[in-house]
Length: 168
Image 1: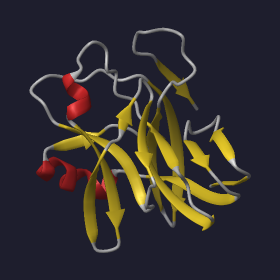
Image 2: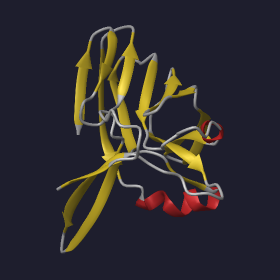
Image 3: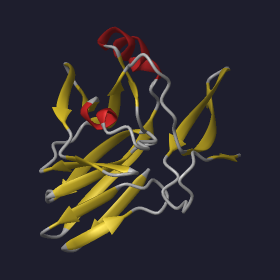
Image 4: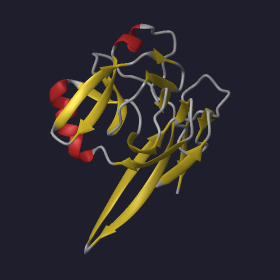
């Protein structure tokens, strides 16, 4: 769980890569969620995950912009940007939102509403390269053990090639 209290300005979490812009003091908290409950839904919608699924809550104030981290390697294929949407997982289903701007590592949303939220990409006939750090988590639930991973964009790489680091 991450919790940030920030005055007016632009910020970036160095762990998650999440960026935000606020005009007043804000308090936001967020954590990573697993994609597993939504994998069939994405498949049915003909989309795939393009970044981590973040559950974001505003405790105070609102954001002018949020820049969600993504791991899609855009390269020279400009058409990939047209296939990107923002997925909102809400209490009574999901909704899709247009992306305002896509950069190498972030998808920008203006005046965001929050829920569990992430960038998704329409499934295409070709493979999509990604750049990411892989973070593995082992969660113990009663007797059952669950192992899942979170792919984080490698936002600090100066290299233009896909990179994958393993963090245990």
